[in-house]
Length: 425
Image (cartoon, rainbow, N blue to C red):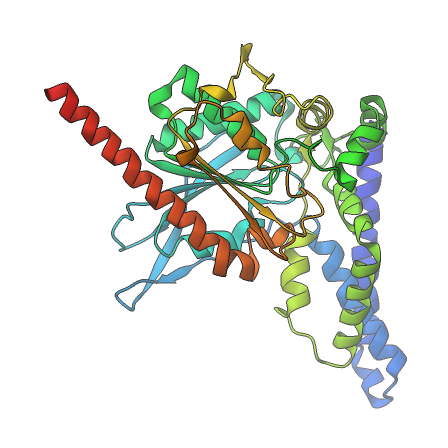
């Protein structure tokens, strides 16, 4: 499957389905048919509208949609989304609320590189921007990155995170969501040894596979069952001719989307059937619940092949993070060297992707941290998405995370003050 023609064929199929939807919608909505009301035509127009939108969204990067924010002064302030660090495979962006005093709490959100754009964390950003300066990793679609930019694997990802942390300084609070949790832990340990003064103040790991073998799930079973050769042959393709990254080996977003949806095929199928009926009855809208969710869910990006394959092999199969055997740029990272960064883990009781038990394993690896600087939380009834978005995040998890951040920031400041007093004496 590792041919440009295969990649282009997949894009042609997507484009054809989008065209079929547009054609059905246009023909069934032709004005002359309004003189002869026909439920079949209404259904065909609805099918076309939903189909066109569905396949169109697969190649569009969603907008952040965060344009203004109401501050304590009661006024709406513009939100300037600025790129503060620009790199080939991902940028660091800042949500700068213009006209507002700089907030003392500085947060770095590490977004997953797992098929969806960083905009998947839009609601998380909105909830944190209230009283924090929020930064986030904005990973690029691999199909738009020229081959001349080189490779990008788990080690490069870890070094990117280390660079972002160094740029933001030691007063930053890092929150890693899902896939990047083990690599963010490794980046923190890497800094603890190489540049200890650049370590973040706190580290919160949300639903990440620190030890995938701790509690098996369908995801970990798949990783253990399939060989690396099989993955490379069936999942990896070369970017086609119409994109900047022509020739780059990637795990295509469309294949990832097929995998995502196959895990809950019945639920997704029913969701689209129901949406078609709502559209035919005139009950749907451009920003209804279905469109809000699927406009984001269907927008997928290609991952660099080396990143995908090294993640499966080193994080899931060999469990290098869980065994504290991870190597970055020739340097063996020792997670036990983290001694001055408070670490908290968050898990969902009903998480079927990263089951509870996989993320909390990070605390056992932090052998150099006193217990007072470790914390964990399991959210009752919350699934994977719920632990960083939705009611569970807003009402329960977010307050706990911010309390953890503030408590350990104060503790660190007190330690610095005490140290300065000792030095003066």
